[in-house]
Image (cartoon, rainbow over all chains, first blue to last red):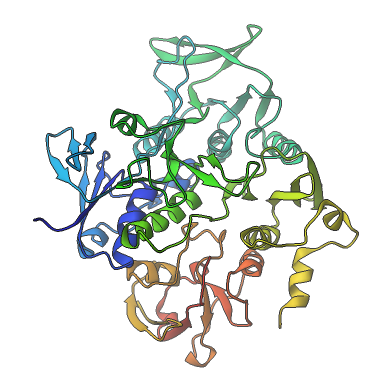
Length: 418
Length: 107
């Protein structure tokens, strides 16, 4: 009999943190971390921010130093692609032909960028951004370029636009919806972001669609919009969403539906197989549907689920259901937007603070229920509401938030000893 | 390089040498010190690297920035006068001898 073994597939933030968390929680068996990329596991948030901006070549994104893994007896297999799962034999099959027997398997396969599919999308200079190598390619393309067209006004697209402005490029953002970050934030925050980008010299084109990419000598030169207008582009970045990497799970017969389906302990339809991070769809009490399955692409979700999965492996009978409050952030032009909770599907908003001065929070409600809070330049609101959403009771209603003098920070100051 | 002492609420005490350039948060992460989460990677977003600085250790810390002050309003364990975000404390020789207490909970 071999040593009990946990194999983690995917060495992104979720996978790497899961391996580390297993050791931190005292797991004494073998821990194998399988990653497709050659790099030591790294953090993704800087890839669309600091790494692209001026001075980005000096940014170190490593999650931990390379020695961290062997020091903890974690076998990091870089450059290895997982090919299949033999669930009956509890063995992971690698493309290299290697076989890894497991007692528990953690799928942290992540997501991949949705590709632009218009004519000309295959031209040189058309990029997506997910990996460190994508970010380095894009950075070397941005240096010396003049005109960037960003397709998609979501997190990635807007962060790339912001970084490219620090490099002095002319930037246009083309968004098919009538507002920026429409899937992620409320209308007042969308409006603020559009103003922020325009004030920083970005051409923001809303409710417009890219219909083709044109080039010369196989390099991009122009982007064509609906209606036939053409705008100059020597770099194009598509930030039009991501697709979860569920193929290996589906081939193994695990339940999949835009994400690998897991229960509240992050177990798939096979209890020996867990799924975490961008690739997993899990029941959440946050957001609209109480305990409706959601799939989240965020660092918070990756890190919290990594620890929760380690607990499920170490203590299958004990441990608690996964219940962390989702939160998200972005930095653009030095402005920080932070989101606590899942605000999609709200039907009322109450804005607090000073929108004109760039410091405000939008409290998003469905009826009387607070779904979440979007804070621009108000980190205290974000920090406090995250805590309130984590509890089962709080007194925030549309009326209480709209009352004159409402100020969470002041309330906190008065309720805590100095 | 600074010698930093991390005291766990359950009584464990860990003393480590943390080289620059790192932060007090990173020093804990690199040494597997339980009780520092630092979910946001050190960008003063999440408040899960909260520490209480032992004011008797004699180390003078950099002043608190407004953002750090704001984030400390949402820590899982109560904020005290000596609360700091360890990701906002860069390690240098001046931090040698720093003693921090880890809170009961970070999230």
